Length: 176
Image 1: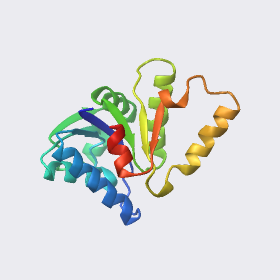
Image 2: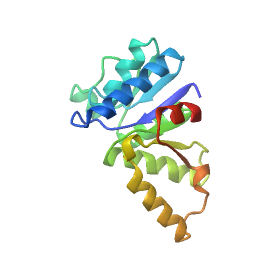
Image 3: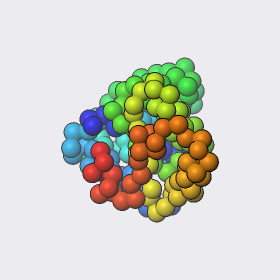
């Protein structure tokens, strides 16, 4: 997997461990010749990742909706910028540019992106999986919900064909 799309928080108020782990992943990506495909914002885990990838010699593709450009919220660590009209276009481009999608801690925007990719996989638009990095159990509650959906038989495609979960950095690297 050469081009790794990452959905994650743009918040600057997370626990330090999330930034530390994002930087660790970014360094690994840069050192191993992987390209980061991300939302391109100059804040939160996105900025942490972009900085770490670039400082380790890697490439960063930022997929930027027009509103971020207008608000001067674009990272200076991008190797390439792809401008989009809005968040929907951004998701489409990010997914098409990526070999696999990794979800780091995030909020509503991250969930929107994750669910869009999972739904498209489920109906056969693509076969890309979401890899959830469950740092400090961040996604535990979401996985409880996913298990409940399976128990209620509303899932049409086995979860392992749509998503994976990694609890540690080493598990993430093994799955990439």
